[in-house]
Amino acid sequence: MSKQINEVTIYTRPEVPIGSHPVETDDYQIPTNEILKVFAAVSRWIRLRVTGATIYGRPRLGKTWMVKFLEKNLPKEIGIEFPIHHIVSLHSKIAKEEEFLETLLMDMGHDFALSGKTSAKRNRLLSFLYQQGNANRFRIVLLFIDEAQCLDEQHYEWLIDYYNKLDRLNVTLVLILVEQEQLNAQQLVFSHGHADQIIQRFMNEEHKFIGIRSLEDIHV
Image (cartoon, rainbow, N blue to C red):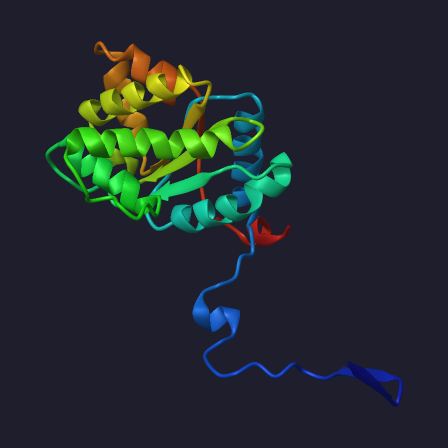
């Protein structure tokens, strides 16, 4: 709504209740040039059916916020709705599959993440991922794993097992590993060991996230 006064247009400001503005509720997204670069890279990876990639950078650059932007906008870019999950709770110092399964199921919003024994939780996870993957034309499920430096080789072995079981059902599990620069160093450790299958499956593309360095980085 506007009215003309002496050739100057004055717009009536909408009424927004105190405490509900997107800036106050932290519910807004303004992508930087760097986030748009990541967005383009991940879109390309999905279209090429890359099964795993890494996005790494220094702490406090906005990587988690970047994932939220990708979650919301990737389906629009790809042109189909497909499941995207953001795994954020991997902090266990000792790798236990039951805890790992619980984390995955809880962060995916499954109602029965804590019920049953390890085998039941594993079957529940695979069934859940299969149902979601089978329901979209690309037959994929995308997982963003935040704090990925918390994963060790055993976690990757389990992920490869889940990947293989879903692959036999023609559903592709795509992992995007997001974390600090030591994740890139971890890849070098795997490359010098006997874990080539981890790199080939989940680390075959990478993008260094640099955040905002100048005013130009927010001109989109």
